[in-house]
Image (tube, rainbow, N blue to C red; front, side, top):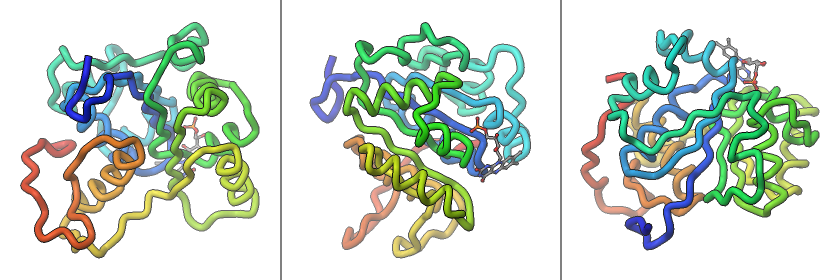
Length: 218
Ligand SMILES: Cc1cc2nc3c(=O)[nH]c(=O)nc-3n(C[C@H](O)[C@H](O)[C@H](O)COP(=O)(O)O)c2cc1C
């Protein structure tokens, strides 16, 4: 199977952890699934708590259906949500090929676990697998300011091959709404994995292409 980039549609692993900015992960999910990209989704307990605080989104019961309904996506999209204690899940093994993995947003707790190589939940295990298989792992931390320990953890992960960044939207594309800023960050994440996107106006681009996509929570 080939996608619009001519690349095979390997699944992409998305982990959403309990840092503020759940909207980044939700928007990424919406973009990928609506373009037919298969997604293996990992959602920490703290992420669900943050979604309740930031979106009034209560994920109890059939979490997959609730998420899809919130994102206004049909049930048929290629989403697989994995319980975090399922070490027998596909993403726990390096022989399950993926296009890479992003942790968006990444909490300081998950950052520390990844830097230490812990595997206390499936997010940690999938990230460790992504690194050991030399696939692309991107972590997008949300916190300010950073302490010495977090800076060291970020350096350790970068040295191990991960792409480390902060959820830090630019302003040169003249954002007018929060959604514009969210789309900037999500667009730059997609860029790292070569997913074609027009979520934001790029530097020296004459005009922003018209994006006719649903926004999160609207
Ligand atoms: C509303 C809310 C916002 C939070 N924001 C952040 C944050 O921006 N960054 C962070 O590292 N932790 C934040 N936390 C704390 C994490 O959720 C907490 O450390 C948790 O243990 C992370 O677990 P996880 O890494 O398994 O998701 C927040 C918690 C809540 C309830």
